Image (cartoon, rainbow, N blue to C red; front, side, top):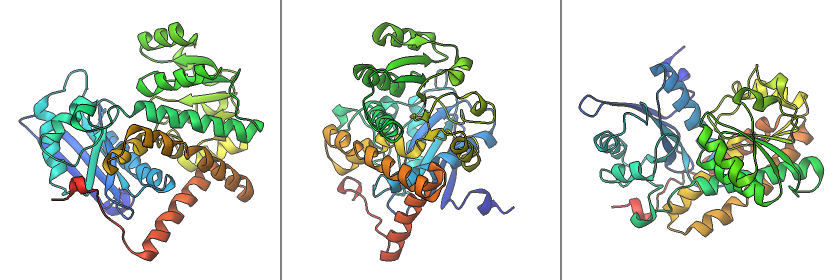
Amino acid sequence: MSIFEGFDNHEQVVFCNDQHSGLKAIIAIHNTQLGPALGGCRMYPYTSETAALTDVLRLSRSMTYKAAVANINLGGGKSIIIGDPKKHISEALFRTFGRFVNSLGGRYITAEDVGTSVDHMEWISYETKYVVGLSTHLGGLGDPSPVTAHGTFVGIKAAIKSTKGVDNLAGIKVAIEGIGHVGYYLCKELHAHGARLYVSDINPEATKRAADEFGAIVVDCDKIYSLDVDVYAPCALGATINDKTIPQFKCSIIAGAANNQLDKEMIHASELTKKGILYAPDFVINAGGLINVYTEVEGFHKERALEKTENIYPTLLKIFALAHKEKISTAEAANQIAEQRIREVTKVGHIYSTHNRYKD
């Protein structure tokens, strides 16, 4: 197999190495047809460089589809830094990474992701203007987690509407895997609307907080998949929908904020359809974070991001309807809609542009 085929038609993959700061990073630009590639920078202690490369390629491709379905004029990109965020954080490392981002001249815009924060984005901003997700005192919109959570909440309502005919969440049982920033805010919204919560996380302090504040029932991490609930909401890392977990599911809906939830995208999407489980494609339901940073690029306020995130509801209903009509999985339907938008833009010419903030 050629190297280009292995990169899944990515436009550019950049390997970043700096001995002084200890930086080992990969920036993947999948597609810039709709605009500059935007995607967060994830820091994670990958077991191998191959695992890191596989993750960044999958994540960046997902960002292309996420922006297309959300009707945002951005392309798909992502970056990863190999390292433990509890041990290897330093200003030198992130400023070095910022210089690599800057060398791409705006083809890629970074933001925070798993293992990174608004503080790290500030260090990056010392070296490049191609960074969003900045704190409010630097003119950014701050932590995008509440917006991502709100989009996921809206998506769960759409899935309930599609399966039950109403979107009232009172009494709906939701199992949430991963109570980090997004998972916490999702619990908060669901609890406020009367949902019954079951939570799991490798961090006992996170689950205790959810139990104390929202009356959530804490379950073991390996038991979350087999609960008899209405909704399973994966909000941790990806690939939790796999050969091992699918036989355990008793839920009727899978709708969560994690990226790359399907271990084998089309195979497992098809298996969920056969099992009668409605799957809300991850790159559609978790688009709130991207919408938030795009709103920052546009120069608008947080309220604008929350308003645009409401569009996840009709978008998912459209995807569910197309999947039902064509007798295909919801993942296939979402991909079709994303690819159609990219093709339509291609016909009328490249619209690549950036906000004034990025122009000299």
